[in-house]
Image 1 (spheres, rainbow, N blue to C red):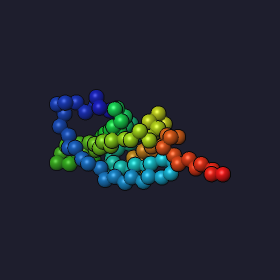
Image 2 (cartoon, one colour):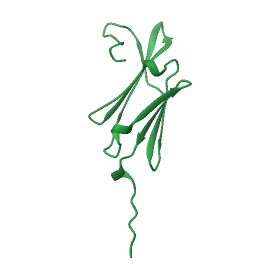
Image 3 (tube, rainbow, N blue to C red):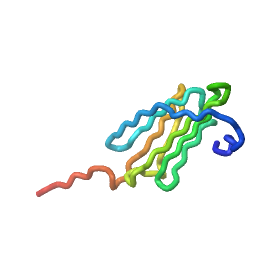
Image 4 (cartoon, rainbow, N blue to C red):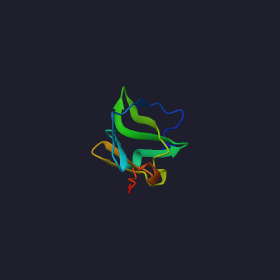
Length: 109
């Protein structure tokens, strides 16, 4: 995906509306990316930073829209098991928590 947006290509960068829900077993990030689909979305993690880029068929001022957003991840995220899917203009990224980040109850005798 990153290679598709060439340096000389003109595009309008957009900041997608985002919701983050932190649950017991995972966190879920939902981003509004209208006009983008699974083939035009790139999600990657490097140095604990999750980067999202979604190319849309929609335009603004005659230029194609590219949604971009980055998130700093904590060590609590199990990076190897992150999953992502798109449906109806929404990109949903599930960030599972590592075992050490989960609450472990200790039985007291």
